[in-house]
Structures are given as structure tokens and as C-alpha cells.
Length: 79
Image (cartoon, rainbow, N blue to C red; front, side, top):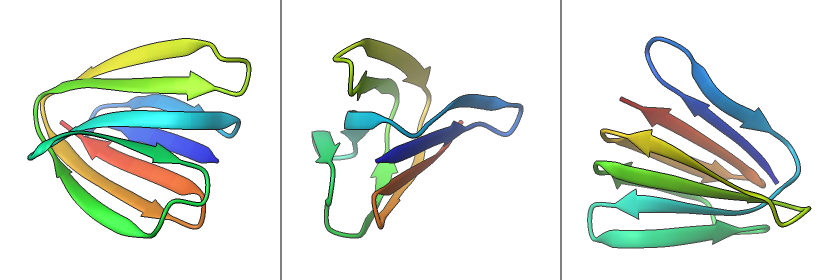
């Protein structure tokens, strides 16, 4: 699956071999795996966890935002 994390100032991350994304939703943490159902979610302040297909983990701090999941692509518009 592909992932893009964008802020108003810059692109934090762009990758296409992602196996898991964990995000801080308004109601708590949630994870997105390959072939996830389409959805749009509001995000609160916290950390986004990204695990690639080599099982390497990266973390990104956000202040909030919106995530769109559609057709194995995750787009995060973060602040």
C-alpha cells in the first residue's frame, strides 16, 4: 500500500511499500492494513507509526489532521 503524509509546509513522508499505518484518531488509535475499506477519519495530536514491508518502523509527530484511505492508498493531511 502507499502512504503520503503532507503538512501545509512540506511532505513528511511518501512511500509505496507500506504494510501498516497506525494513526491517532479522535476516538483512539487505529491501524490500516492492505485492502482496508475506504474511509475518512479525523486525527488528533499524536504519533503516526509506519511499518514497511521490511518490518522497519518510522514515527511522525502530528498536531491533528485528516486521513483518507482508498484503494490501498493512505493520504494524511496533517498540521
